[in-house]
Image (cartoon, rainbow, N blue to C red; front, side, top):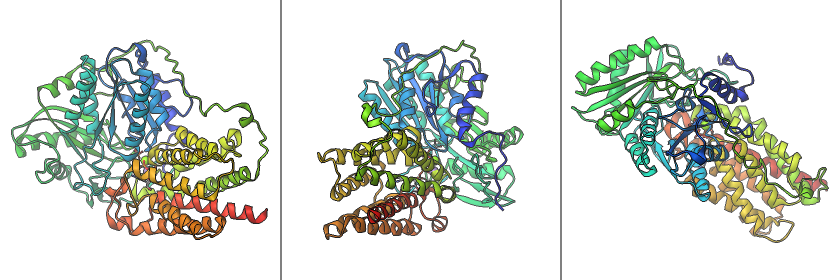
Length: 594
Ligand SMILES: Nc1ncnc2c1ncn2[C@@H]1O[C@H](COP(=O)(O)OP(=O)(O)O)[C@@H](O)[C@H]1O
Ligand SMILES: O=C(CO)COP(=O)(O)O
Ligand SMILES: [Mg+2]
Ligand SMILES: [Mn+2]
Protein backbone atom coordinates (compact mmCIF):
# COMPACT_ATOMS: atom_id res chain seq x y z
CA UNK A 1 0.00 0.00 0.00
CA UNK A 2 1.57 3.27 -1.11
CA UNK A 3 1.80 5.94 1.59
CA UNK A 4 3.06 9.51 1.80
CA UNK A 5 6.84 9.53 2.17
CA UNK A 6 7.92 10.98 5.55
CA UNK A 7 10.12 14.01 4.83
CA UNK A 8 11.68 16.62 7.12
CA UNK A 9 10.66 19.69 5.17
CA UNK A 10 8.20 22.56 5.18
CA UNK A 11 6.21 23.16 2.01
CA UNK A 12 7.20 20.68 -0.73
CA UNK A 13 7.18 23.47 -3.30
CA UNK A 14 9.87 25.36 -1.35
CA UNK A 15 12.40 22.52 -0.99
CA UNK A 16 14.87 23.80 -3.57
CA UNK A 17 14.91 27.38 -2.30
CA UNK A 18 15.32 26.21 1.28
CA UNK A 19 18.05 23.76 0.29
CA UNK A 20 20.00 26.60 -1.28
CA UNK A 21 19.54 28.74 1.85
CA UNK A 22 21.14 25.98 3.92
CA UNK A 23 23.91 25.43 1.41
CA UNK A 24 25.05 29.06 1.28
CA UNK A 25 24.94 29.24 5.09
CA UNK A 26 27.23 26.21 5.19
CA UNK A 27 29.62 27.36 2.50
CA UNK A 28 30.17 31.15 2.53
CA UNK A 29 32.11 30.88 -0.73
CA UNK A 30 28.79 30.10 -2.41
CA UNK A 31 26.07 32.60 -3.01
CA UNK A 32 22.50 32.51 -4.17
CA UNK A 33 21.91 34.82 -7.14
CA UNK A 34 19.63 37.73 -6.24
CA UNK A 35 16.55 37.83 -8.35
CA UNK A 36 12.92 36.75 -8.50
CA UNK A 37 11.91 33.81 -6.32
CA UNK A 38 11.71 31.57 -9.35
CA UNK A 39 15.43 32.03 -10.12
CA UNK A 40 17.40 29.40 -8.19
CA UNK A 41 21.05 29.88 -9.12
CA UNK A 42 24.08 29.17 -6.92
CA UNK A 43 27.34 30.82 -7.89
CA UNK A 44 30.81 31.52 -6.59
CA UNK A 45 30.59 34.54 -4.31
CA UNK A 46 33.94 35.82 -5.58
CA UNK A 47 33.00 35.92 -9.26
CA UNK A 48 31.29 38.72 -11.13
CA UNK A 49 30.69 38.14 -14.80
CA UNK A 50 31.86 41.49 -16.03
CA UNK A 51 35.37 41.04 -14.67
CA UNK A 52 35.73 37.25 -14.65
CA UNK A 53 38.86 36.48 -16.65
CA UNK A 54 38.41 32.73 -17.09
CA UNK A 55 35.89 30.54 -18.88
CA UNK A 56 32.83 30.20 -16.66
CA UNK A 57 31.73 26.57 -16.26
CA UNK A 58 27.98 26.29 -15.64
CA UNK A 59 25.87 23.23 -15.10
CA UNK A 60 22.54 22.40 -13.55
CA UNK A 61 19.33 20.58 -14.12
CA UNK A 62 16.52 19.22 -12.05
CA UNK A 63 17.02 19.27 -8.30
CA UNK A 64 16.76 16.11 -6.25
CA UNK A 65 20.26 14.99 -7.18
CA UNK A 66 22.12 16.80 -4.33
CA UNK A 67 24.89 17.61 -3.89
CA UNK A 68 24.76 17.88 -7.69
CA UNK A 69 25.07 20.42 -9.02
CA UNK A 70 25.31 23.34 -6.54
CA UNK A 71 27.64 21.36 -4.26
CA UNK A 72 30.23 21.38 -7.01
CA UNK A 73 30.37 25.15 -7.36
CA UNK A 74 33.79 26.47 -6.36
CA UNK A 75 37.10 27.58 -7.80
CA UNK A 76 38.47 24.81 -9.97
CA UNK A 77 35.08 23.27 -10.70
CA UNK A 78 31.70 24.92 -11.48
CA UNK A 79 31.32 28.68 -11.52
CA UNK A 80 27.54 28.46 -11.19
CA UNK A 81 24.79 25.86 -10.91
CA UNK A 82 21.23 26.40 -12.13
CA UNK A 83 18.72 24.55 -9.97
CA UNK A 84 15.39 23.46 -11.41
CA UNK A 85 12.51 22.16 -9.39
CA UNK A 86 12.76 18.55 -8.28
CA UNK A 87 13.40 16.41 -11.37
CA UNK A 88 12.47 19.28 -13.65
CA UNK A 89 15.09 21.12 -15.61
CA UNK A 90 15.37 24.85 -14.84
CA UNK A 91 13.56 27.27 -17.05
CA UNK A 92 15.30 29.44 -19.63
CA UNK A 93 15.23 32.64 -17.58
CA UNK A 94 17.06 31.03 -14.66
CA UNK A 95 19.77 29.68 -16.94
CA UNK A 96 20.10 33.07 -18.61
CA UNK A 97 20.39 34.79 -15.23
CA UNK A 98 23.21 32.43 -14.30
CA UNK A 99 25.04 33.00 -17.59
CA UNK A 100 24.76 36.77 -17.23
CA UNK A 101 25.94 36.66 -13.61
CA UNK A 102 29.26 34.89 -14.11
CA UNK A 103 30.24 35.06 -17.78
CA UNK A 104 33.01 37.42 -18.78
CA UNK A 105 34.90 37.96 -22.01
CA UNK A 106 36.25 34.40 -22.04
CA UNK A 107 32.70 33.04 -22.37
CA UNK A 108 30.99 30.11 -20.68
CA UNK A 109 30.64 26.37 -21.07
CA UNK A 110 27.29 24.76 -20.23
CA UNK A 111 27.54 21.12 -19.14
CA UNK A 112 24.12 19.54 -19.62
CA UNK A 113 22.91 16.04 -18.71
CA UNK A 114 21.16 14.41 -21.64
CA UNK A 115 17.50 14.90 -20.78
CA UNK A 116 15.03 16.50 -23.16
CA UNK A 117 14.07 19.24 -20.76
CA UNK A 118 17.64 20.08 -19.91
CA UNK A 119 18.77 20.03 -23.52
CA UNK A 120 15.99 22.31 -24.66
CA UNK A 121 16.07 24.77 -21.77
CA UNK A 122 19.84 25.12 -21.73
CA UNK A 123 19.89 25.14 -25.53
CA UNK A 124 17.41 27.99 -25.82
CA UNK A 125 19.16 29.94 -23.05
CA UNK A 126 22.47 29.52 -24.89
CA UNK A 127 20.96 30.88 -28.10
CA UNK A 128 19.50 33.85 -26.23
CA UNK A 129 22.84 34.51 -24.49
CA UNK A 130 24.70 34.38 -27.77
CA UNK A 131 22.24 36.93 -29.18
CA UNK A 132 23.24 39.14 -26.25
CA UNK A 133 26.90 38.81 -27.22
CA UNK A 134 28.08 36.09 -24.83
CA UNK A 135 30.37 33.32 -26.08
CA UNK A 136 28.67 30.04 -25.14
CA UNK A 137 29.46 26.39 -25.78
CA UNK A 138 27.45 23.35 -24.65
CA UNK A 139 28.58 19.81 -23.84
CA UNK A 140 25.86 17.18 -23.40
CA UNK A 141 26.69 14.23 -21.13
CA UNK A 142 25.00 10.87 -21.74
CA UNK A 143 27.02 8.27 -19.78
CA UNK A 144 24.28 5.71 -19.14
CA UNK A 145 25.45 2.19 -20.05
CA UNK A 146 22.49 0.24 -18.72
CA UNK A 147 20.23 0.27 -21.72
CA UNK A 148 20.89 -0.81 -25.29
CA UNK A 149 21.30 2.12 -27.70
CA UNK A 150 17.93 3.81 -27.11
CA UNK A 151 15.14 4.02 -29.64
CA UNK A 152 14.14 7.40 -30.94
CA UNK A 153 15.70 10.74 -30.19
CA UNK A 154 16.19 10.80 -26.42
CA UNK A 155 19.66 9.21 -26.38
CA UNK A 156 21.59 7.93 -23.36
CA UNK A 157 20.79 9.47 -19.98
CA UNK A 158 23.21 11.74 -18.12
CA UNK A 159 24.19 10.21 -14.76
CA UNK A 160 26.94 10.52 -12.12
CA UNK A 161 29.74 10.51 -14.69
CA UNK A 162 28.75 14.13 -15.28
CA UNK A 163 30.54 15.06 -12.02
CA UNK A 164 33.86 13.88 -13.44
CA UNK A 165 33.21 15.98 -16.54
CA UNK A 166 32.56 18.99 -14.28
CA UNK A 167 35.94 18.46 -12.64
CA UNK A 168 37.84 18.15 -15.91
CA UNK A 169 36.16 21.25 -17.35
CA UNK A 170 36.64 23.23 -14.14
CA UNK A 171 40.34 22.42 -14.01
CA UNK A 172 40.81 23.31 -17.68
CA UNK A 173 39.05 26.63 -17.13
CA UNK A 174 41.04 27.37 -13.95
CA UNK A 175 44.21 26.83 -15.97
CA UNK A 176 43.15 29.69 -18.21
CA UNK A 177 42.35 27.66 -21.33
CA UNK A 178 40.11 29.16 -23.99
CA UNK A 179 36.43 28.32 -24.30
CA UNK A 180 37.09 26.07 -27.29
CA UNK A 181 39.81 24.21 -25.38
CA UNK A 182 37.72 23.83 -22.21
CA UNK A 183 34.77 22.57 -24.28
CA UNK A 184 37.02 20.11 -26.09
CA UNK A 185 38.41 18.77 -22.79
CA UNK A 186 34.89 18.40 -21.38
CA UNK A 187 33.59 16.69 -24.52
CA UNK A 188 36.54 14.30 -24.56
CA UNK A 189 35.96 13.44 -20.90
CA UNK A 190 32.24 12.90 -21.53
CA UNK A 191 33.07 10.34 -24.23
CA UNK A 192 35.37 8.41 -21.87
CA UNK A 193 32.99 7.74 -18.99
CA UNK A 194 30.27 5.15 -18.52
CA UNK A 195 27.83 4.68 -15.64
CA UNK A 196 25.30 2.14 -14.46
CA UNK A 197 23.32 1.88 -11.24
CA UNK A 198 21.46 -0.52 -8.97
CA UNK A 199 18.55 0.45 -6.73
CA UNK A 200 16.90 -1.22 -3.77
CA UNK A 201 14.11 1.33 -3.46
CA UNK A 202 12.44 3.99 -5.57
CA UNK A 203 12.93 7.62 -4.55
CA UNK A 204 10.01 9.59 -3.11
CA UNK A 205 9.37 13.08 -4.42
CA UNK A 206 8.59 15.71 -1.76
CA UNK A 207 4.89 15.68 -0.98
CA UNK A 208 4.23 12.54 -2.98
CA UNK A 209 3.47 8.97 -2.02
CA UNK A 210 6.22 6.41 -1.72
CA UNK A 211 6.20 4.02 -4.64
CA UNK A 212 6.07 0.34 -3.81
CA UNK A 213 7.18 -0.58 -7.30
CA UNK A 214 10.26 -2.43 -6.08
CA UNK A 215 9.04 -5.24 -3.84
CA UNK A 216 10.92 -6.66 -0.84
CA UNK A 217 13.91 -8.77 -1.81
CA UNK A 218 14.11 -7.10 -5.22
CA UNK A 219 16.76 -4.91 -6.80
CA UNK A 220 16.58 -2.90 -10.01
CA UNK A 221 19.53 -2.72 -12.35
CA UNK A 222 20.06 0.12 -14.79
CA UNK A 223 17.80 2.63 -13.15
CA UNK A 224 17.77 6.33 -13.89
CA UNK A 225 18.11 9.08 -11.27
CA UNK A 226 14.48 10.14 -11.46
CA UNK A 227 12.79 7.04 -10.11
CA UNK A 228 11.93 5.88 -13.59
CA UNK A 229 12.01 2.13 -14.16
CA UNK A 230 15.40 0.62 -15.01
CA UNK A 231 16.56 -2.17 -17.29
CA UNK A 232 15.65 -5.18 -15.16
CA UNK A 233 14.18 -6.08 -11.75
CA UNK A 234 15.80 -9.13 -10.16
CA UNK A 235 16.15 -10.86 -6.81
CA UNK A 236 18.64 -9.05 -4.58
CA UNK A 237 22.12 -10.55 -4.92
CA UNK A 238 25.26 -10.15 -2.78
CA UNK A 239 27.03 -6.90 -3.69
CA UNK A 240 29.93 -8.92 -5.07
CA UNK A 241 27.64 -10.29 -7.78
CA UNK A 242 25.97 -6.93 -8.37
CA UNK A 243 29.31 -5.17 -8.87
CA UNK A 244 30.43 -7.82 -11.38
CA UNK A 245 27.18 -7.41 -13.36
CA UNK A 246 27.55 -3.63 -13.45
CA UNK A 247 31.23 -3.61 -14.43
CA UNK A 248 30.52 -6.14 -17.16
CA UNK A 249 27.75 -3.97 -18.59
CA UNK A 250 29.73 -0.72 -18.48
CA UNK A 251 32.76 -2.35 -20.13
CA UNK A 252 30.70 -4.42 -22.61
CA UNK A 253 32.35 -4.71 -26.00
CA UNK A 254 28.89 -5.22 -27.53
CA UNK A 255 27.58 -1.77 -26.72
CA UNK A 256 31.14 -0.38 -26.64
CA UNK A 257 29.89 2.66 -24.75
CA UNK A 258 33.33 3.50 -23.29
CA UNK A 259 36.66 3.16 -25.19
CA UNK A 260 38.25 1.07 -22.44
CA UNK A 261 40.18 -2.11 -23.12
CA UNK A 262 42.45 -4.37 -21.08
CA UNK A 263 45.65 -2.63 -20.04
CA UNK A 264 44.07 0.81 -19.85
CA UNK A 265 44.19 3.09 -16.82
CA UNK A 266 40.82 4.09 -15.29
CA UNK A 267 39.17 6.18 -12.60
CA UNK A 268 36.38 4.67 -10.49
CA UNK A 269 33.47 6.52 -8.90
CA UNK A 270 31.08 4.68 -6.59
CA UNK A 271 28.17 7.06 -6.11
CA UNK A 272 25.46 6.67 -3.46
CA UNK A 273 21.93 7.45 -4.63
CA UNK A 274 20.80 9.04 -1.39
CA UNK A 275 19.83 6.38 1.13
CA UNK A 276 22.74 3.94 1.06
CA UNK A 277 25.08 4.00 4.07
CA UNK A 278 28.69 4.94 3.39
CA UNK A 279 29.63 1.54 4.75
CA UNK A 280 27.80 -0.20 1.88
CA UNK A 281 29.33 2.18 -0.65
CA UNK A 282 32.80 1.37 0.62
CA UNK A 283 32.00 -2.35 0.47
CA UNK A 284 31.01 -1.89 -3.16
CA UNK A 285 34.26 -0.03 -3.79
CA UNK A 286 36.25 -2.74 -2.06
CA UNK A 287 34.68 -5.25 -4.44
CA UNK A 288 35.01 -3.12 -7.56
CA UNK A 289 38.72 -2.26 -7.45
CA UNK A 290 40.11 -5.84 -7.46
CA UNK A 291 37.56 -6.86 -10.10
CA UNK A 292 38.70 -4.03 -12.36
CA UNK A 293 42.31 -5.02 -11.82
CA UNK A 294 42.07 -8.83 -11.96
CA UNK A 295 38.99 -9.57 -14.06
CA UNK A 296 39.21 -6.65 -16.49
CA UNK A 297 42.98 -6.06 -16.50
CA UNK A 298 42.71 -2.36 -15.75
CA UNK A 299 44.91 -0.08 -13.65
CA UNK A 300 42.75 1.88 -11.18
CA UNK A 301 44.42 5.25 -10.75
CA UNK A 302 41.83 7.14 -8.73
CA UNK A 303 38.84 6.05 -6.62
CA UNK A 304 36.05 8.38 -5.50
CA UNK A 305 33.46 6.95 -3.10
CA UNK A 306 30.56 8.98 -1.75
CA UNK A 307 27.20 10.47 -2.70
CA UNK A 308 27.80 12.89 -5.54
CA UNK A 309 24.70 12.66 -7.74
CA UNK A 310 21.77 11.20 -5.85
CA UNK A 311 18.13 10.59 -6.54
CA UNK A 312 16.57 12.04 -3.39
CA UNK A 313 16.24 9.11 -0.94
CA UNK A 314 16.83 6.24 -3.34
CA UNK A 315 18.69 3.26 -1.85
CA UNK A 316 21.36 2.06 -4.22
CA UNK A 317 24.50 3.16 -5.95
CA UNK A 318 25.92 3.80 -9.40
CA UNK A 319 29.37 2.97 -10.66
CA UNK A 320 31.17 5.21 -13.12
CA UNK A 321 34.34 4.21 -14.93
CA UNK A 322 36.32 6.85 -16.77
CA UNK A 323 39.28 6.08 -19.01
CA UNK A 324 42.22 7.97 -17.55
CA UNK A 325 45.25 9.49 -19.19
CA UNK A 326 47.72 12.02 -17.87
CA UNK A 327 45.57 14.98 -18.93
CA UNK A 328 42.46 13.58 -17.24
CA UNK A 329 44.35 12.71 -14.04
CA UNK A 330 45.93 16.15 -13.97
CA UNK A 331 42.48 17.75 -14.13
CA UNK A 332 40.99 15.42 -11.53
CA UNK A 333 43.90 16.09 -9.16
CA UNK A 334 43.88 19.87 -9.69
CA UNK A 335 42.94 21.91 -6.61
CA UNK A 336 39.35 22.94 -6.14
CA UNK A 337 37.28 24.69 -3.50
CA UNK A 338 34.04 22.99 -4.54
CA UNK A 339 32.69 21.80 -1.18
CA UNK A 340 31.44 18.39 -2.31
CA UNK A 341 34.35 17.32 -4.47
CA UNK A 342 35.90 14.55 -2.35
CA UNK A 343 39.34 16.06 -1.71
CA UNK A 344 40.95 19.42 -1.00
CA UNK A 345 37.92 21.24 0.33
CA UNK A 346 38.43 24.82 1.39
CA UNK A 347 36.80 28.14 0.75
CA UNK A 348 35.87 30.83 3.24
CA UNK A 349 35.78 33.87 1.03
CA UNK A 350 33.62 36.71 2.36
CA UNK A 351 30.42 36.68 0.31
CA UNK A 352 30.28 39.51 -2.25
CA UNK A 353 26.80 40.72 -3.28
CA UNK A 354 26.23 40.27 -6.99
CA UNK A 355 23.06 42.21 -7.85
CA UNK A 356 22.10 41.00 -11.30
CA UNK A 357 19.52 42.99 -13.29
CA UNK A 358 16.69 40.48 -13.75
CA UNK A 359 14.38 40.69 -16.80
CA UNK A 360 10.96 42.08 -15.73
CA UNK A 361 8.74 39.19 -14.64
CA UNK A 362 6.40 40.19 -17.46
CA UNK A 363 6.76 42.46 -20.44
CA UNK A 364 6.25 46.02 -19.23
CA UNK A 365 2.91 46.92 -20.69
CA UNK A 366 1.57 50.44 -21.02
CA UNK A 367 -0.76 51.39 -18.23
CA UNK A 368 -4.09 50.84 -19.99
CA UNK A 369 -3.18 47.23 -20.71
CA UNK A 370 -2.56 46.64 -17.04
CA UNK A 371 -5.46 48.71 -15.72
CA UNK A 372 -7.81 46.57 -13.67
CA UNK A 373 -10.67 45.73 -13.66
CA UNK A 374 -10.47 45.26 -17.42
CA UNK A 375 -13.65 46.00 -19.40
CA UNK A 376 -13.81 42.80 -21.41
CA UNK A 377 -15.18 42.70 -24.92
CA UNK A 378 -16.64 39.41 -26.22
CA UNK A 379 -13.23 38.08 -27.30
CA UNK A 380 -11.71 39.06 -23.96
CA UNK A 381 -14.47 37.26 -22.12
CA UNK A 382 -13.99 34.15 -24.26
CA UNK A 383 -10.24 34.25 -23.57
CA UNK A 384 -10.85 34.55 -19.85
CA UNK A 385 -13.24 31.58 -19.60
CA UNK A 386 -11.15 29.40 -21.90
CA UNK A 387 -7.91 30.05 -20.01
CA UNK A 388 -9.61 29.55 -16.66
CA UNK A 389 -11.17 26.25 -17.74
CA UNK A 390 -7.95 24.97 -19.32
CA UNK A 391 -5.82 25.83 -16.31
CA UNK A 392 -8.24 24.32 -13.81
CA UNK A 393 -8.49 21.15 -15.88
CA UNK A 394 -4.78 20.40 -15.56
CA UNK A 395 -4.68 21.51 -11.92
CA UNK A 396 -7.38 18.94 -11.19
CA UNK A 397 -5.47 16.32 -13.17
CA UNK A 398 -2.16 16.88 -11.34
CA UNK A 399 -2.06 13.71 -9.23
CA UNK A 400 -3.05 11.46 -12.12
CA UNK A 401 -0.42 13.06 -14.34
CA UNK A 402 2.22 12.52 -11.66
CA UNK A 403 1.11 8.94 -11.18
CA UNK A 404 1.32 8.19 -14.89
CA UNK A 405 4.65 10.04 -15.14
CA UNK A 406 6.01 8.06 -12.17
CA UNK A 407 5.52 4.90 -14.21
CA UNK A 408 6.90 6.10 -17.54
CA UNK A 409 8.97 9.14 -16.62
CA UNK A 410 10.10 10.82 -13.41
CA UNK A 411 6.82 11.55 -11.69
CA UNK A 412 6.76 15.31 -12.02
CA UNK A 413 4.69 16.02 -15.11
CA UNK A 414 1.59 16.97 -13.13
CA UNK A 415 3.49 19.16 -10.70
CA UNK A 416 5.33 20.90 -13.52
CA UNK A 417 2.18 21.66 -15.52
CA UNK A 418 0.17 22.51 -12.43
CA UNK A 419 2.79 25.06 -11.42
CA UNK A 420 2.37 26.73 -14.80
CA UNK A 421 -1.42 26.65 -14.64
CA UNK A 422 -1.56 28.23 -11.19
CA UNK A 423 0.80 30.98 -12.32
CA UNK A 424 -1.25 31.61 -15.46
CA UNK A 425 -4.42 32.06 -13.38
CA UNK A 426 -2.62 34.47 -11.05
CA UNK A 427 -0.95 36.45 -13.85
CA UNK A 428 -4.17 36.57 -15.85
CA UNK A 429 -5.94 38.39 -13.06
CA UNK A 430 -3.00 40.74 -12.58
CA UNK A 431 -2.11 41.83 -16.07
CA UNK A 432 -3.13 39.70 -19.06
CA UNK A 433 -4.50 42.05 -21.77
CA UNK A 434 -7.42 39.66 -22.43
CA UNK A 435 -9.04 41.82 -25.09
CA UNK A 436 -5.87 41.38 -27.13
CA UNK A 437 -5.77 37.64 -27.85
CA UNK A 438 -2.29 37.60 -29.41
CA UNK A 439 -0.67 39.50 -26.54
CA UNK A 440 -2.49 37.30 -24.04
CA UNK A 441 -1.06 34.19 -25.67
CA UNK A 442 2.37 35.81 -25.49
CA UNK A 443 1.91 36.56 -21.80
CA UNK A 444 0.87 32.94 -21.19
CA UNK A 445 4.17 31.92 -22.75
CA UNK A 446 6.04 34.34 -20.49
CA UNK A 447 4.30 33.01 -17.39
CA UNK A 448 5.25 29.48 -18.40
CA UNK A 449 8.83 30.49 -19.21
CA UNK A 450 9.16 32.08 -15.77
CA UNK A 451 7.99 29.19 -13.61
CA UNK A 452 7.83 25.96 -15.59
CA UNK A 453 10.97 23.88 -16.05
CA UNK A 454 11.18 20.40 -17.46
CA UNK A 455 10.31 19.28 -20.92
CA UNK A 456 6.75 20.52 -20.57
CA UNK A 457 7.89 23.99 -19.58
CA UNK A 458 10.20 24.61 -22.47
CA UNK A 459 7.87 23.03 -25.02
CA UNK A 460 4.81 25.01 -23.94
CA UNK A 461 6.94 28.15 -23.95
CA UNK A 462 7.89 27.40 -27.55
CA UNK A 463 4.24 26.50 -28.32
CA UNK A 464 2.96 29.87 -27.10
CA UNK A 465 5.65 31.89 -28.78
CA UNK A 466 4.93 30.23 -32.14
CA UNK A 467 1.18 30.78 -31.74
CA UNK A 468 1.82 34.39 -30.80
CA UNK A 469 3.99 34.98 -33.85
CA UNK A 470 1.17 33.63 -36.02
CA UNK A 471 -1.59 35.63 -34.30
CA UNK A 472 0.48 38.83 -34.23
CA UNK A 473 0.83 38.65 -38.03
CA UNK A 474 -2.84 39.52 -38.39
CA UNK A 475 -3.88 43.14 -38.14
CA UNK A 476 -7.47 42.50 -37.09
CA UNK A 477 -8.26 43.02 -33.42
CA UNK A 478 -10.68 40.07 -33.30
CA UNK A 479 -9.01 36.76 -34.10
CA UNK A 480 -10.97 34.60 -36.53
CA UNK A 481 -11.37 30.84 -36.08
CA UNK A 482 -9.17 30.35 -39.15
CA UNK A 483 -6.41 32.38 -37.50
CA UNK A 484 -6.73 30.35 -34.30
CA UNK A 485 -6.41 27.22 -36.42
CA UNK A 486 -3.31 28.54 -38.15
CA UNK A 487 -1.83 29.53 -34.80
CA UNK A 488 -2.42 26.05 -33.38
CA UNK A 489 -0.86 24.50 -36.46
CA UNK A 490 2.22 26.74 -36.17
CA UNK A 491 2.52 25.99 -32.47
CA UNK A 492 2.33 22.25 -33.00
CA UNK A 493 4.91 22.48 -35.77
CA UNK A 494 7.27 24.35 -33.46
CA UNK A 495 7.12 21.61 -30.83
CA UNK A 496 7.98 19.09 -33.48
CA UNK A 497 10.77 21.27 -34.84
CA UNK A 498 12.53 21.89 -31.53
CA UNK A 499 11.56 18.71 -29.69
CA UNK A 500 12.22 16.46 -32.65
CA UNK A 501 9.14 14.29 -32.17
CA UNK A 502 6.28 13.62 -34.57
CA UNK A 503 2.94 11.83 -34.45
CA UNK A 504 3.24 8.37 -32.93
CA UNK A 505 6.25 9.17 -30.75
CA UNK A 506 4.12 8.91 -27.60
CA UNK A 507 4.23 12.54 -26.63
CA UNK A 508 1.91 15.52 -26.17
CA UNK A 509 1.93 15.80 -29.98
CA UNK A 510 -0.29 12.72 -30.12
CA UNK A 511 -3.04 14.86 -28.67
CA UNK A 512 -2.20 18.16 -30.34
CA UNK A 513 -1.66 16.94 -33.90
CA UNK A 514 -5.08 15.25 -34.14
CA UNK A 515 -6.65 18.35 -32.60
CA UNK A 516 -5.03 20.62 -35.13
CA UNK A 517 -5.83 18.34 -38.07
CA UNK A 518 -9.51 17.87 -37.18
CA UNK A 519 -9.98 21.57 -36.41
CA UNK A 520 -8.65 22.46 -39.84
CA UNK A 521 -10.75 19.80 -41.59
CA UNK A 522 -14.00 20.77 -39.85
CA UNK A 523 -13.51 24.50 -40.40
CA UNK A 524 -12.73 23.89 -44.08
CA UNK A 525 -15.94 21.83 -44.25
CA UNK A 526 -17.87 24.91 -43.12
CA UNK A 527 -18.76 23.56 -39.66
CA UNK A 528 -19.32 26.32 -37.08
CA UNK A 529 -16.19 27.15 -35.04
CA UNK A 530 -17.60 26.02 -31.68
CA UNK A 531 -18.54 22.60 -33.00
CA UNK A 532 -15.26 22.32 -34.90
CA UNK A 533 -13.36 23.18 -31.70
CA UNK A 534 -15.34 20.54 -29.76
CA UNK A 535 -14.83 17.84 -32.40
CA UNK A 536 -11.11 18.57 -32.48
CA UNK A 537 -11.00 18.23 -28.69
CA UNK A 538 -12.54 14.78 -28.99
CA UNK A 539 -9.74 13.91 -31.44
CA UNK A 540 -7.24 15.17 -28.88
CA UNK A 541 -8.69 12.89 -26.20
CA UNK A 542 -8.70 9.88 -28.54
CA UNK A 543 -5.13 10.62 -29.56
CA UNK A 544 -4.00 10.89 -25.96
CA UNK A 545 -5.62 7.61 -25.00
CA UNK A 546 -4.02 5.90 -28.00
CA UNK A 547 -0.55 6.66 -26.65
CA UNK A 548 -0.93 3.59 -24.41
CA UNK A 549 -0.21 1.45 -27.43
CA UNK A 550 2.70 3.47 -28.78
CA UNK A 551 6.40 2.69 -28.46
CA UNK A 552 8.01 5.80 -27.04
CA UNK A 553 10.50 7.50 -29.31
CA UNK A 554 11.08 10.69 -27.34
CA UNK A 555 11.57 11.74 -23.74
CA UNK A 556 12.09 9.58 -20.69
CA UNK A 557 9.59 6.95 -21.79
CA UNK A 558 12.05 5.69 -24.37
CA UNK A 559 13.89 4.08 -21.43
CA UNK A 560 10.82 2.13 -20.29
CA UNK A 561 9.65 -1.34 -21.32
CA UNK A 562 6.59 -1.80 -23.53
CA UNK A 563 4.54 -3.62 -20.91
CA UNK A 564 4.91 -0.71 -18.52
CA UNK A 565 4.10 1.78 -21.27
CA UNK A 566 0.86 -0.05 -22.07
CA UNK A 567 -0.30 0.32 -18.48
CA UNK A 568 -0.72 4.10 -18.69
CA UNK A 569 -1.22 6.81 -21.32
CA UNK A 570 1.44 9.40 -21.95
CA UNK A 571 1.03 12.06 -19.25
CA UNK A 572 1.95 14.96 -21.51
CA UNK A 573 -0.59 13.87 -24.09
CA UNK A 574 -3.29 13.52 -21.44
CA UNK A 575 -2.48 16.95 -20.08
CA UNK A 576 -2.69 18.53 -23.53
CA UNK A 577 -5.98 16.81 -24.32
CA UNK A 578 -7.34 17.85 -20.95
CA UNK A 579 -6.67 21.58 -21.23
CA UNK A 580 -7.68 21.64 -24.88
CA UNK A 581 -10.98 19.85 -24.17
CA UNK A 582 -11.77 22.08 -21.21
CA UNK A 583 -11.18 25.19 -23.32
CA UNK A 584 -13.44 23.87 -26.08
CA UNK A 585 -16.27 23.10 -23.65
CA UNK A 586 -15.92 26.52 -21.99
CA UNK A 587 -16.07 28.34 -25.32
CA UNK A 588 -19.16 26.36 -26.39
CA UNK A 589 -20.94 27.08 -23.09
CA UNK A 590 -20.07 30.76 -23.31
CA UNK A 591 -21.40 31.14 -26.84
CA UNK A 592 -24.57 29.20 -25.94
CA UNK A 593 -25.11 31.42 -22.92
CA UNK A 594 -24.67 34.64 -24.92
N1 LIG B 1 10.59 15.53 -27.71
C1 LIG B 1 9.37 15.74 -27.22
N2 LIG B 1 8.42 16.37 -27.95
C2 LIG B 1 7.17 16.60 -27.47
N3 LIG B 1 6.80 16.22 -26.23
C3 LIG B 1 7.71 15.59 -25.46
C4 LIG B 1 9.03 15.32 -25.90
N4 LIG B 1 9.69 14.66 -24.89
C5 LIG B 1 8.80 14.54 -23.89
N5 LIG B 1 7.63 15.09 -24.22
C6 LIG B 1 6.42 15.22 -23.42
O1 LIG B 1 6.80 15.64 -22.10
C7 LIG B 1 6.07 14.88 -21.15
C8 LIG B 1 6.84 14.81 -19.85
O2 LIG B 1 6.87 16.14 -19.33
P1 LIG B 1 7.83 16.46 -18.08
O3 LIG B 1 7.47 15.58 -16.93
O4 LIG B 1 7.82 17.92 -17.88
O5 LIG B 1 9.21 15.98 -18.68
P2 LIG B 1 10.57 15.69 -17.94
O6 LIG B 1 10.31 15.40 -16.52
O7 LIG B 1 11.09 14.50 -18.66
O8 LIG B 1 11.34 16.92 -18.17
C9 LIG B 1 5.90 13.54 -21.80
O9 LIG B 1 4.78 12.87 -21.26
C10 LIG B 1 5.69 13.89 -23.26
O10 LIG B 1 4.32 14.12 -23.53
O1 LIG C 1 16.42 16.12 -13.24
C1 LIG C 1 16.55 16.41 -14.42
C2 LIG C 1 17.85 16.26 -15.09
O2 LIG C 1 18.66 17.28 -14.59
C3 LIG C 1 15.40 16.96 -15.14
O3 LIG C 1 15.38 16.68 -16.51
P1 LIG C 1 13.96 16.85 -17.24
O4 LIG C 1 13.51 18.26 -17.04
O5 LIG C 1 14.16 16.52 -18.68
O6 LIG C 1 13.05 15.92 -16.50
MG1 LIG D 1 11.25 15.94 -14.99
MN1 LIG E 1 8.70 14.29 -15.84
